[in-house]
Length: 395
Image (tube, rainbow, N blue to C red; front, side, top):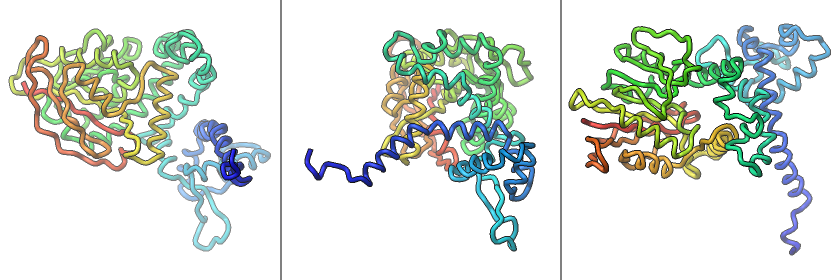
């Protein structure tokens, strides 16, 4: 090795720091879990003003010996952006207290949306344990590292463990509370229809949000029987226990919110084909829609932090489920294989990709394009959901 290729001592320590940072990344997750477990965001919120360390320790009802531990916990959480410090008043030169940030406000149990159930379950020991089997999985024959660790797929494990199933459903429901932002800023996606099926819709949080904005709709939530068991129907909302790979109830629109990234390409094509079969033949001239809200990996087209998060999500799918995160080309391939026809995606972070389904039954029927739907930029959602794909058919 030439001398110029040998890192300096300073460079070597930076390389070491890079390795250590990734080695100990789990500490960030566990510190956040601890804060949620102790209820720190809610305590600071209830205080209504900057909260000193001693006030926080007192409210937590912890022994004074733990005060230094809370100080160190909060120091990392402040550095990570979950809390901030602020002077107690204008006359105070040194004494500061903790205040919420935008991130910790999304963890408040009293507010909607509240992502604390999602954050809590994702670092639950049940979800962390499969990562210990990651290397073994590559050497074995199981479908996922989760299956390597527990001997059964994730959704079957949920079916067999009611307590964990409840936690998972609450986590998915809390994530779905963000849907209100989609409905608010993207109303045109949900217009011109009388009925909608939320496929894999869990406990119905998304459907209820959509009904709040469009009360005339008839909504159906389709999910596994153990997910929707004992959830009562209402006048405009019906729960159906079933298998989305076998049959989907007919409707004007079909919504998949972060469902398809759980599944393999073959299974996604099956879902889309079931949607085509369920598109109603009556009401000549009405537009049919398949609405997909999911992640698209764009690489160099976005911020590095966002790309890293999407790649982490992709590995998460590999550990827990047979799914994956997809590029635009990979999404387009799914739609074409299922019989849909896609226009070129627009350039915004969230976009609507119109297409049509075959206008009659049979192999390779004629396809017609529909006019593109107006693009909408949603700044807040750009940190959560990358794209909405809208596929529709004019009968």
